[in-house]
Length: 64
Image (cartoon, rainbow, N blue to C red):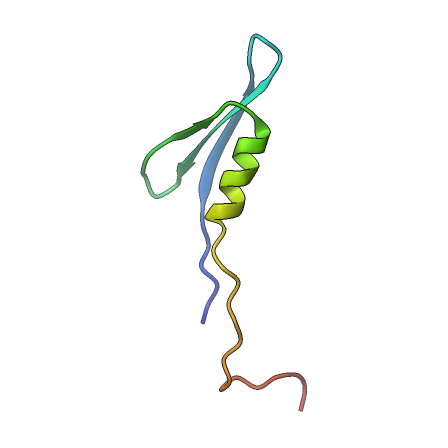
């Protein structure tokens, strides 16, 4: 199973109050999500990450 890439456009800027704001949009189009802080952005990126592929029992494990 090939890895699936998730391409996002991430924009970050410094707000007038000194905080860092961010927005994320899928490169293929879709809704723009805005984040008031970096913790919210990090939480979104962690949940948006595709799951790691699990090895199937048919694939060889290790070297032969």
